[in-house]
Length: 241
Image 1 (cartoon, rainbow, N blue to C red):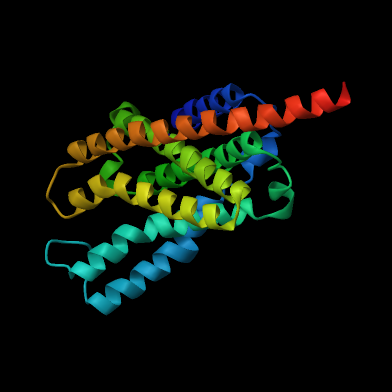
Image 2 (image 1 turned 180 degrees about the horizontal axis):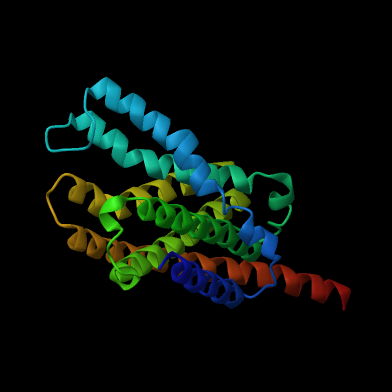
């Protein structure tokens, strides 16, 4: 199922990037693939262990301190959006952001690549769990839907941040905070499931309203930057004529 998810996710990423309109080197999509494993193993896991030690708990539960629940809820959005932000600051990536449309494209590529890497990492981690060993591969179709939604969310959120950086420092900070907030909102379902408030199936359904919300913001932004980019091209053409 992980292999099927990666194939479907890569196809979806290619279609989405092509719909934005400009050619894109494949290395830009492949660059963020290892980042999910890196941020999980090197950042999120050590911080979680430290937080759990401070809270004197082993796992998230109804009796966990409120501050611990908030910290664990915010840890993935802050760290994951942060490592994607670092990628956008790489000089050879930043140079490709020349206008609003290229910012949408580059940001989406970085986010989609991160999402594909996350699907691989999560699929591998689930494959190591002995309680799932006896299940057939087709029992994991919910994994396919959830990961495709997550791949899109990562692409859209990083695109929002990239456009913010193109507009300036203040806009970039605001875009990063918006991405963290939307990411945290999309993670409400899994947190409630870990607390035993809702079941795992219901938690997956929580994701899709946020997919629609993020898709609306992404499309609005994509439309907003296109006229500006087109206007600059028209002005250059008129001056040359």
